[in-house]
Image (cartoon, rainbow, N blue to C red; front, side, top):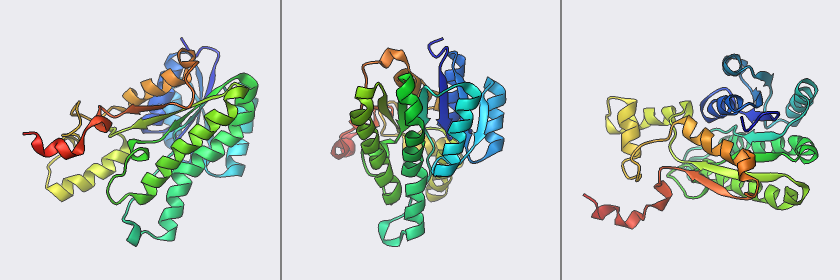
Length: 262
């Protein structure tokens, strides 16, 4: 019950990593405020865990300001922010429109910035902490994904700035960088892989994209949630500004040696 007495705000809490994190926090005794743009998936998760739903756009200041005010009024405060909301930003730079670039910025970076800024007064007052969800795309570059790669790199820089600026005020900030995770967003990308390679199932697509990952499989959302909850807990009380990868060892692979493997 490591989150007993704690209140967590999870953005993008209706599906994937956000939903798995909300479930884990609730299982460990915490109270969870689920924030997102679509009410229906949020309510489904809230019904499972006894959480509360606050429909808001994490990138929109008035929307998040209202949600944070309602959470504080309803639950009494905020101890943990899981800045999980994110989205696409794919396509080659030469073809990327201003709209696509701006949308990637909004979905991946603005969501983290606005939600952190609005939660910080509560987190400072209560000695809370922030976990920012980035990606291994924030450490490396995938093909034709300039918007997503850039914003996930920026999320890491933002989290480091928060760790530097607010650590002395009692607020820890850390980043989790997942690799492939079996989420609805990744499933959409597997549809593309299936069509490109003539594969018969989404399972085959996941096997193909993880064939050079040392563990040879994608993560489940729960695997990432476990890492998030460790960083958000008092067990990690001396961890601030860290980057924790949950990628099955993908980031350890020496790419030029792949041709030497049977």
